[in-house]
Image (cartoon, rainbow, N blue to C red; front, side, top):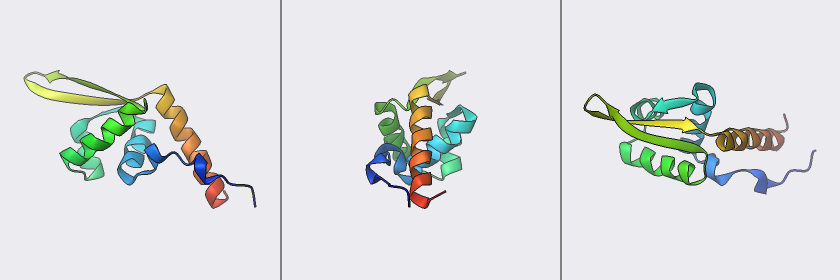
Length: 98
């Protein structure tokens, strides 16, 4: 068995909701808040907390604006976030031995 270091698992990404956000954004590049909320079946408050953690880590950028008169929040994965997600997947791959 290959040597595995559990410390390589990124705790910022590892939470279920944050992992869902990162997995979706890795292919979609960006999404609006309501799209993520519906996709992940999350409450507004819970998703906001997890997005803030990803933003503080530099993994996503959050842009607030308006579409007409309605508020619109867009979330985009950053290059740092893409690299972190790739590293997370590699670490999980080592853990399960694939």
